[in-house]
Image 1 (cartoon, rainbow, N blue to C red):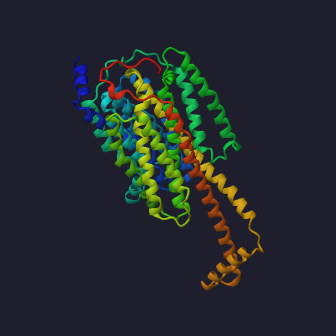
Image 2 (cartoon, helix red, strand yellow):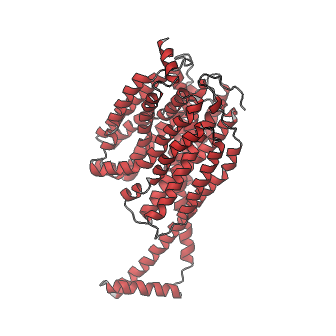
Image 3 (cartoon, rainbow, N blue to C red):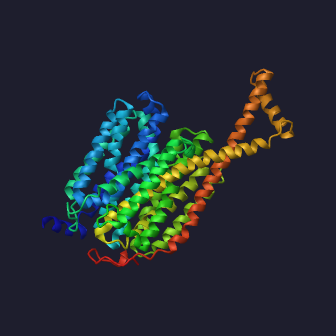
Length: 530
């Protein structure tokens, strides 16, 4: 009774933002960890006497464990209680982070990264579910703006923060910084969070067969995406086997969950039109957003010659644009603006930013990229918050945890596919353009002779003998062809990203306008799929 009374008061406005801070601190910590470790891989490999390829399992193991646990977060929250689950996973994530920092060898580090990914996988959907339930309809815009700000900004700022920590201290401190955040989150969750009355702990069956299919299928799918380009995709027996396993296990899991009485993932929620459209939109959003998080720094470092720290720093304006616009978007939603128009506007603005990236060349500087980054961040702000509120609007409160789990799963799957796509696309298209450009080079052509004469003269002036100067001139010609081929592949990739955003705008029109602004905190939830 005391818990329900406190919960009721909280929903009237007391301690709501304290609850928001409690759940967001842990969620941002987990999201940050997915990107902050990336730049530390060479240091980890050198410190633990491993190759960089071997060290990539530090990332892969985390992502696989994360992908397996994320879909069942809603079921776990209903089975053992949301507060108890949050306290458990935050404790596990914090302890495993410290163990990662103390790891004496690569296998031990990978083991603790699996534990870290397992405990951290549920933090995003749990935090989102808590905010959606705590804040009444008229205030959900501000709540989702607060949530989205952390979820969007953390992976953008992660590489910069990780690079600074690694260069200033050591890669181990990338993990140690989670300790104070984790302790703060535990204290806040213990003090302010309570389970909603409709959660009945221990009243559900455990679907061991379903969980087994999910674990095997999602694990195989994640490893396939992460290692595909490295293993030459379907030219590798490993990738073929992973594709077969994922292709059998995941459809079997979906069929089973649709047929049993108490599924661990509730695909039946897709009967709500807004939620089904939102699933498609957020998958594409994750695909493009995380693909661009890899693509742009890669362009800066490989073609413009910037350092990793500089590239990370000039990737940050996206986060600045998002941070500046997110409060405005939340305010407009609370004032009754149509979320569908805001989402459509956001996709168009973000698409224009990608078309702007596609016009860059080898002479582009920091300020050539700055404006496009701000525009992309602005567009993302107008997508994330309204899309979440529109998608979750028809979901009954008792199903919110299941909905946020599924929503987070597809966003993460889209993210993994986006990263795999851009790395493969740039590599393959660069090879294609290189072969086309090389075929157009005739050794006796006027342009080639002039280029070789000019570069040869420069090398002769630098002290090289005629034979060496000629060889270096040919090497410079080949390097120029490589650079131009890579530039064309990046330009095409940016255009594909922009076209994807424009192509899914019509899907927004299929969504119904959110009714959140007209709903009181305890109003009945709609039961119709409409």
